[in-house]
Amino acid sequence: LWAMVTDAWGTSRLIFGEQRSEWQKYLYDMVCRIVWILPVFALFRRYHSDLPLSLHELCTWKIRPKLFSVFFLLFTAYALLSMFFTHGRFRINPEFSWFRLTTFYLMVGLVEELVYRGWALNAFSAFMTERKANLLSTLFFILLHWPAYFIRLFVTGTLQTSAFLLQSLVVLVMGLLFGYMFRKSKSIWTPLLLHSYFDWVVDLLVA
Image (cartoon, rainbow, N blue to C red; front, side):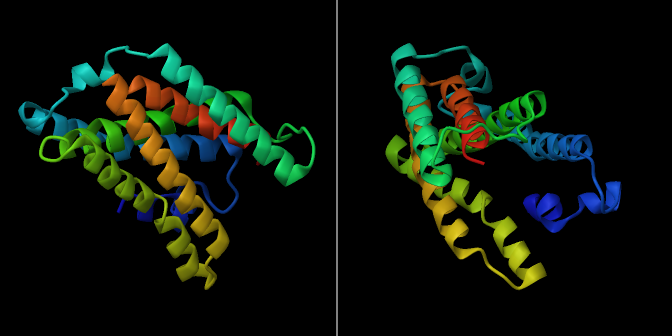
């Protein structure tokens, strides 16, 4: 629901007008995600006694170096292969804004991992196996990425079918992997940092 009133619907035009600067877009994107994450803290406070892991436990710094290193290298290899497949050469996105996009993707990683692994997978694990909880939370994670496509379909009459299917597949795989990291580490930090890094390095090398 929140996605439907954020940038996919063009709500930012009501605040900044038709022509937004990059920093206005950045501010809008950050504020949207801060608002989007607030209900999760209310849910943690209300249901903390029913959850396998408390918010404090989730946020405890626990990184498994071997697990982190393996997925870091896999994500780097994926970004490099995608870069050569897309552009045919080594290339860094000339429009990449280092500070703005690094902080933005850290925020994206924090919000999405806290919601879909820290809350959803954690809560589902209270009454089903962790594997089933991971699959179910990943399905909701996929749904997060759909409204933008259907809103654009409503506005423009065109559905970007190939992009829609490709992103759904990538999000399915990544959601299951982030859930696996969360299950192994019992902390949000490994999936959070690797989620942020994956989005960051793909934007840096492939976009």
